[in-house]
Image 1 (tube, rainbow, N blue to C red):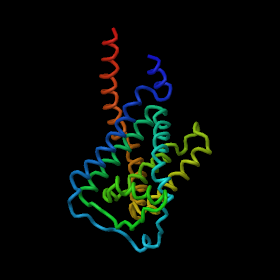
Image 2: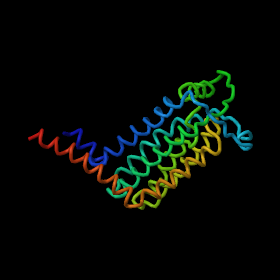
Image 3: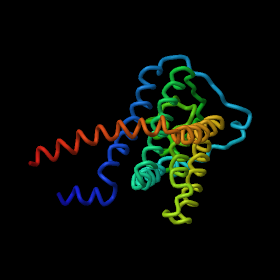
Image 4: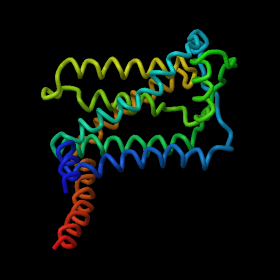
Length: 232
């Protein structure tokens, strides 16, 4: 009971499900697209600007460290009012559905540089390359999620201005890191940011966010009503 109270103090229990679904659906889209289209023909979409961007292996710290940024900001969004939560997480789910379609219809890849295993950051970068294949690139989910972390707090006066500004800076740094680690190309970055903005706007339509709300309410009733009955 004490553990449940601590969790409820962090995130309202009715809003825990959107957080869990966002994580699960993201992984399902990313791994599912790879499992299906991994052996299909992949397209190179590098442009002239990409050749001018240097590899900077220390930027792997931002590329990997952004997961903490994502977790914190998604929790902050989940603490908002129900309508805002439904709008945000409906947009999040919509964006992943679009990503999944694109990853299957137009799978992309890129050419990674040869890195010698010398020094901590070089080895870290090689580890990133080893665990993260060069696919599911356009649009960049790293950029997509990071931009969601910013727009989810954008204009929220209950969030300190300094933190909203820091979220914007962090989102931009993540976008840059995807380029300086050579994990993505420029069009992947713009694709991720653009998709986040479009889906966020689309989810403000009642048809979308209210549909998400109905599903959320249905599942929450099943979960919490069952829990009450069992406890009785």
